[in-house]
Amino acid sequence: MTVTGTRTPPPVLDARTIRSWMSLAVRTATRTRELIDGFNVFPVPDADTGSNVLLTLTSAAAALDRLPRAADAAQATRTIADGAVRGARGNSGLLVSQALAALAEVAADAPTGLRPVELVHAYEAIASSTWEAVSRPVTGTLLTVAADAAQAARALLDDAAPTAPPTVGDIAGAAALSAQESVVETAGTGHGPVDAGGAALMLMLTALCDVLSAPAPGAQPDGPLTAVAVQMLTDLAASSVSHGSLLQGGPASSTGEFEVMYLLEATAAQATALRHQLERVGDSVGVVGAPDALGVGLYQVHVHTNTPRAALPRTGRCRQVCIHHLHPTALALGEPLEAGEPPLPYASAAQASAGHVISFERLASRRRLDGVGPQQEQASGRRPSASPATERAHRVGVIACTRAPGLIEQLARTGAVVLLDPDREGVLRAVGDLGLPQVLVLPCDADSAARAHEAGRRLSARTVPSTVCGPAGAATPEHAGHAPTSSQLLVADTDDEARVLAASVAVATRTTGTSLTDLALFAGRAGEDMRTLALDGEAAEADAVASAVAALLRPDDELLTVILGRDALPDVGALAVSAAERAAALTGTDPVEVVVHAGGQAHPDVLIAIE
Image 1 (cartoon, rainbow, N blue to C red):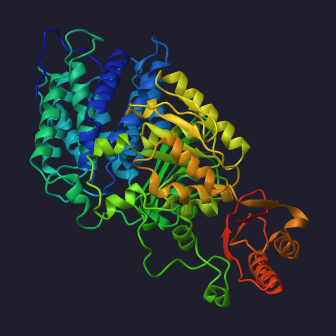
Image 2: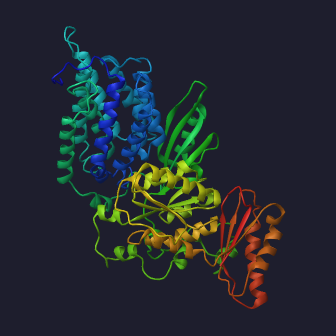
Image 3: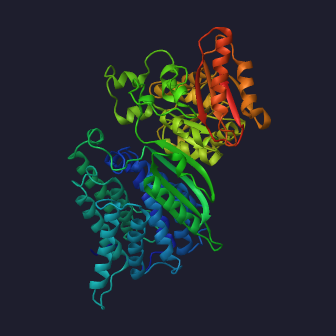
């Protein structure tokens, strides 16, 4: 395929063209976000590939905007790669960042710009590195689209006559056309109407072809070839089975319940060891990044797993740890619990059979606020289903902050995005992941509340419609936006892990159809009558905890929650249960119900909550 236009195509892919490419790629991803979301069936049918790719490309483009205009192609490609790695979301976003990192590796040896042969090398590097980035590669996906594009680019270069060598525009055109054909061929492979990740990559490659055929160097192209590709995808979507139907079909290709993502500062050897660790505990594994001159790099980590705590790194420094539950649970939907609850933590056989020692799921079903929540009505058929756009506009996202790795599963099962060891950037990342106009943050301590307010101020400075709200009950103006960057943030009154747990359960079934302010009130009410006591050191030893429980309990108390820290002794939970039994015997009342969590937090050693 030869690209013609009103000017001679540039001899190299230079920094100015890369800037135009990123601009068009972001505009296209914005335009097609919902379309690509609708294709998303593989590896998990969670309808977020378009959103994840948009967030990843937006991060890459934002990093490029901060680069001086005099920067060369090597600097420009390295900047977009680093920005993409920092902002990568989901499996597809991770692979897009890997593709940009491969481009940067090739461009490092071509600072003035990529010639045709080097552009071919870049396509081949994208194909090989994305394949290697996936722990269990699957054909008929983005990986196949990348490989087909690289093969077409190589074939054009090898078959060209010496007297008529191809231009960079010709190479990009051949790769884009092959990518489009490859995407069409993913239909019928079990990955939806077409593979969502493959479609997103194809649009990126087509956008590159468009900027190389723009009428003037550095001009903002209209993207005629991209427009044709978008129309092709639109037609394929219209003639295929809906995403909703596919969602209700067979099982997803990924078997993990939870998606875990974080940034990791580590050496290449540590990153490799982590990848092997993740492959043992999950699938859809990605560890993308590159070390710097000192041997330490920033890596974006992604995995689907049933054991999210096992996905945390043993070496290196991680931050922005976000955990999502990939499938709605009975707890989040407000449905009746099925038989076969998870085993009780820190419970002996005798305690497990006692009616007053209960699991988190049983607790959640009992402590839901009165009435049937909006999601329950919809699930039971008493309320007509809204369109995805309407549902998104009326849904409130929830971010549950915690410093207890052992609580991330329970919190994620409520439908919240769980943020471990929260900081400002982590809150912003979680807001972006949700992509909703309104978000409620449940802080676990004063520091996390401060970081959430910082994130709110950052959002407010970034977009005019954004608003930072104070404690629950403050007036909240209505917000009509849908973009992830225009989210209205409200920070609830929760101030410890026990109140975050209670609030997460209280709001789980009310995130659709409930105003942000009302949802914050529900979260606050969940902990209104809760008395908590944080114990450290000698005060957290088993006998001392038992004495504290006995002293705190009142005849009318109904629930005792014990959250064990990292340094808590293993018999603390059992002795707390025994102390509750003795207190009930002394007063002649029924024992309180007890929940014991192995939180694993650094502080406090033991957190007692009574209500």
